[in-house]
Each structure stands twice: as structure tokens, then as C-alpha cells.
Amino acid sequence: MNSFIKNYKVPLLFTLLSFALLSLVAIQINWFTTSKKLIEEQFDQKVHLAIGSALSDFNSLHHTELDLNEEEICGENTSYTYITSETKPLSYSNQLELEVSLKNYMSCYGIDEKYSVDIFDDNYTAGSGTYCCSINSLKGNNQDYKLGVSFDSKKNYLFDKMKFIIFSFIAIFILLAGVSFLILSSLVKQKRITDNNVDFFNNTAHELKTPLTSISLALSMLRKRNASLANDKYLEIIKSENSKLTDQIERVLYLSKMESGEYRLKKEALNVKQVLADAVANLQLIIEEKDAKVNLHIDNPDLMIEADYFHLTTAFKNLIDNALKYCESKPIVDVFILELADTIKVTFSDNGVGICRLDQEHIFEKFQRVNTGDIRASNGFGIGLAYVKRVIEMHKGFINVHSELSRGSKFVLTLPYTIQ
Image (cartoon, rainbow, N blue to C red; front, side, top):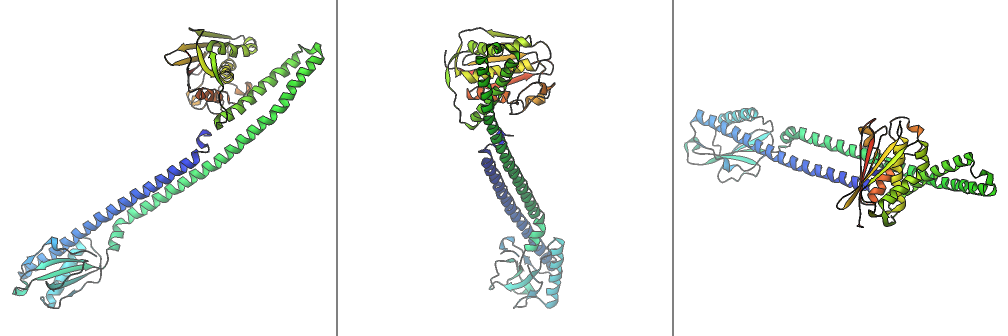
């Protein structure tokens, strides 16, 4: 979570969410426009069918020849129902009959919008919102007439057919926008808390360095002034615990600088076997105390890599120290160094308590400790493996873990090298 909400992540996430919402709006508008066009075409077809059916019925009853040409349709839309014509080609009763027939067919096809009906000759130009059909040989004369149906508006019909689409679009957009806002607000708040915690932790670590340094100097001065205290066991305990706490604080500060990009590795040509030997030597007291064995297996004792001595040694020491701490029996640690074509694999294998699969997903995060055994019995801040992972990554390598409960753990470090 901490790495997810780094400074550059929140603006990036905000940009991605904004782009996603805008894309959704664009897709929904396109879908809305397409649906509206299809519904309008469906409306036109229903009007054509209603007009054609009404005129066909009228023709069959009055033996009037009708020429229905759908390509002569002029437009669309709604109003109050009536029939007018200046030339009066139909009697009033026939007009009412045609009106009733047209109204029935309109209702049959689900068109409840108000409309106007006109009968006019070819000299009259119908408006763009009128559906027109030709009527030939009306009342036995040779004059051609047209029947026109016009709608003042189709808004009610379109809204009724599209209201589910409209409301679902608005609801989905509001829901996604609300959830996105809550996520961003939560991330910003979490980032602020995390930044404050990191600043507090780093400041605390800096403040602790001063008294620890003073304790170390005081121990040195005390031993110089009183030679009889040179091997005093209580002073040794103070020195040992002071050294452990100093190492922990140094790792916190180094890890913070590495993650912020402030720290640069000091690379040099190093002998891998010597680096491991130095790491083991630093842990010799703990190894003897636990009656442990640390075995180094290396085919090429002269194998060289280019790396930062301090941090690589500390990373190796952390892995060995964990193997010694989290073991319920006599610890045995085997370190294998395998030379490949362009990389070096360093494997740390132990007979410890192991790590369950669920914990393996989080062990490389800061301040995470494995919930196996009595973890409080072992000192530490839970940053050791996070520090190791960061050091290996800064060397352009990577780390993997293979472990099972009660069957030990195996950490595999893959490091590139430039010195043959």
C-alpha cells in the first residue's frame, strides 16, 4: 500500500480515472445517439405501416385506387388530430372515416403522439415534418392528391422508449464518479497519513542516533579509564544491544533514502565469497550462541561482481540473521553461489519455521513481520526483507522466496555482474 501511494501515483491515478470516466461518457453518448436513431427509424416504419394500412382499408371500401410510395416520405413529428383540404376531394363523412381508421392503426402500432392530417394536391408543398402518400384518381377525376401526416413532436415517444437508457446512463455515471471520488479521497488521506508516519519515523530514527552514539562513546571512555571493566559482561550486553539498535536505525534511514532516490550505491569490484564471509563473521557471536552452522557452497572462489560492499554485505547478513532467529531447532544455513552466463544466483536455504503462502505476498513490504511462532521474541522493526529487496533491485537484480511451514525457507537472489 505504501508503494502504491507514492507521490507520483495519486496524480497518475486521478488522470486515469478521469480518462476512464470521459471515455465512458463518450461511449454512452455514442450508444445514446445510435439508440435514438434506431428508435426514430422504428417510429418512421410504424407510421408508414399505419398510413398504408389506413389507406388500403379506405380504398377497399370505396374502390379508390391508391399509389403508396414510401420513398415520398418527407419527414417526421406531433399535434391534434384533424383533416383539411382546400379542394375538398373527400366528403366530410369520408374524412371522418379515414381519420378514425388512421387513428386506430396509429394506436395499433403503439403511436400515441398527437398528429395532423392533410389532403392536398400536387401544387401544395408539404413541410419537412410530414409523411406523404399519393392518392390517385380520387372521386373519379384525374387530379392527383396526397395525404400527409405530420407530428409536432416525437419527444414524448422517444423519451418513453429511451428513459431506461437515459436513467441507467446517469445512474452509472454518478455511481462511478462517486466511487472514484471516494477512492481518490481515501488515497489522498492515506498518502498524507503515510507521509506523516514516514516523516515521524525518520525523524525519530535521527533523534535516536544521537543518544546511541553517546552511549557508544561513553562505553569506550569507561573501558579506557577502567581497565578492569574491559571484559565486563554487563558492558558487553550494553554494547551488543546498542549495536543492534544502531543497525536497525541505520537500515531504516538507508531504506528511506533508497526509496526516495536520494541514495546512490558506491559500486566497486567485490569477491562474492569474501562478501559472504564478512557477513558471516559479523554474525559469529549469534552463530556460536545458537550453536548454528552456516555452510558456503561456491564453485568459483574468485568470482567477482560490481556492487556496493556495505549494502550487499548487510543484505546477506539480514538473510542469514533471519534464518538464525526463526528456527526452533539447531539452525543450519546453506548458501549456494551459482555462476550463470550473465548473472549470479545466491541462494540462502535454512531449516527454520518456514513462511506460509499468504505471508509470502507481504514479507518484502516495510514493517511486515511473519505471523509464525513468537515474533515478539525476536527483535526487529520488520524492515529487513524490505531493505534486502530494495538493495537487490538497486543492483538491477531481483529476489524470490520459496517456503513451506515447518520445512524451512529458500531465498534466491539473482544479481548481474559486469566483471569477469
